[in-house]
Length: 285
Image 1: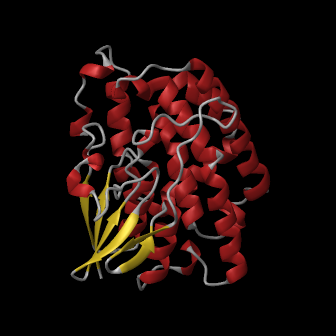
Image 2: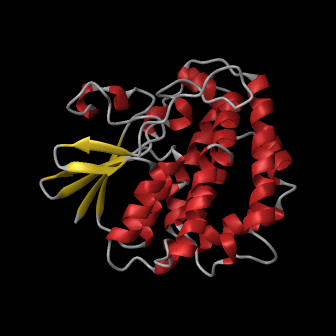
Image 3: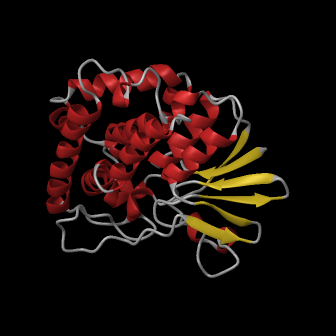
């Protein structure tokens, strides 16, 4: 089975899927989608109906002549559907599309976590620790992934958009939304430590190897590389256990973890340079 992955590495779910494929030696072709230019909204990437294949924080797998095409999380920070805001904000959240998308060849997983679990289960040679066959262990991983969407991811996305990214997309920074997002982000980090990283746990749930939950959440926290250093220190500084855990996930998946996250380091250098964000060419990243 050959995968074709349509992705943008600025997106956390894109990075998680790419890293999972690389670390497990899965043969795939990566096709970059330019979010800044709105390529994900073009007719080229629309399905048979008027609905775009790239929905809010969604991905999909479509079988085309024995090549499985994976459309990965091309809605970064709510770009496709407006800025994400914390639940306490007056602005309503964009609706998430259904888990499955029906195409001529059938229904395929469409949410990023569904794609991660699909890949972990469908390709030979993927170690069991990524998504255990034991149903009890698998249910615990699923519970973390379910929690992620409306907690860590929502806080991380909203904070990044309203502290550094909004000008890139021609929008205005919203300090109030950033403040609310920081509260959600901080409580999420505390929950990870107290619930899933108890004691000297190296990975979530005390597992001996990383799961797709470790990879997904660690890639989310790596989005903090885009923040101002003072913000990163203020928010992550009080959570040394989180920082050690992210380092464990990185070590377990290197050299691919660092390679795939290189786009964040390059983007941060551009975001925080004296030149106006609106005048920079982020499409080359």
